[in-house]
Image 1 (tube, one colour):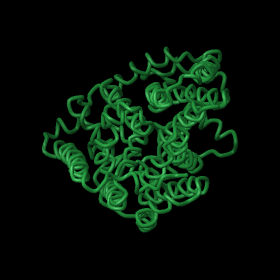
Image 2: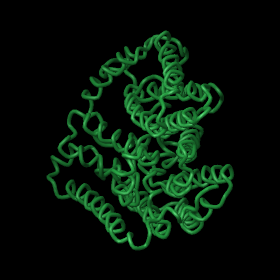
Image 3: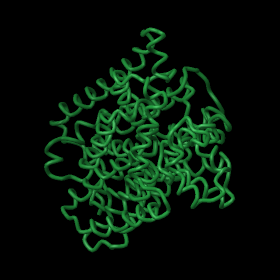
Image 4: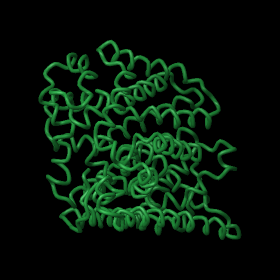
Length: 451
């Protein structure tokens, strides 16, 4: 029997200190945000120009605007704030997951439509630096894989466009296959990103339930559905990366259950293997995988998962692409572009401010509850996964290979941070959901984002 979500709140006499912690967490995040937005405004023009982000720390430009998605976004937000927590507690599991997925899609699409059909959705992935720009030129998939690494570096006649060069061939391959299926063009590509990206809410809930934390999954679902990160889910391929790896973690969580099927372990490995061939940075998803093993206190599915991942790596290698060669070339390509000029002195903490925009203040408020040492020491699954997402972000930040645009690049990690909201008291859930929605609405209406 599912434990009612309201039982998760602290007893009344002990509430005062945790609530102060919630306010302090949100307050610190607000100060970080304000500082990150203010510093570029008061700095010299020469310094500001080197950020290559007109609305730093968000990649976009300041442009207050509204669109036909404004009203639907307000309606979706109001419905989730009003009914989300109660429905998450009471709906049968499968119906809850289907509802969450549908509402998440509606939220992401509404936010995208604030910028209009072409600018906000159908045209985002057709830019000259994007994947679709290269799809038409791929007439031979095996040939593309064989020559992929040779076209990564810039300043060659046949260099890949920025995003294709910056990722392994799996990302381009996905859009090529989509085109081969007759689903070519920006609208179909955007729909794929949105539907797969929004499935993360379902995957996270499935993972938590498989690890014995269904109550936490139900508490977090309204926040996963109404995530400010939806701003970038409908318009970037990183949403696909997030979806693939989230389902990898979910399948691994299913595999570690008592009597878990080896098929789930192999499938998880296949998705992890494909994930690192979508984006080099997704090797950091090994951290949430370790969290799954720790919380279940077993490494039983490790061999099946490793076999699945190695099978994918072997397939790409035999086709002509060696991951390590691609990675070293991508680091070189990274410093051939504007990354060489972007200031790490700003972006190492500006990246974290961009992450706050993606996960919202409610996540920051709940963080101290989620990563409390007593919970981590007890190997509580939800806490471990939140800590894993945070660790992945910090490692990515320290690497210096993510300077700006992390509001989309770190989507695969951000959505595990959002799970921290499961620890917020039931009595304050609606208020924090309103804060989340307001933050997303401010960003989408004040900034014309590049993604």
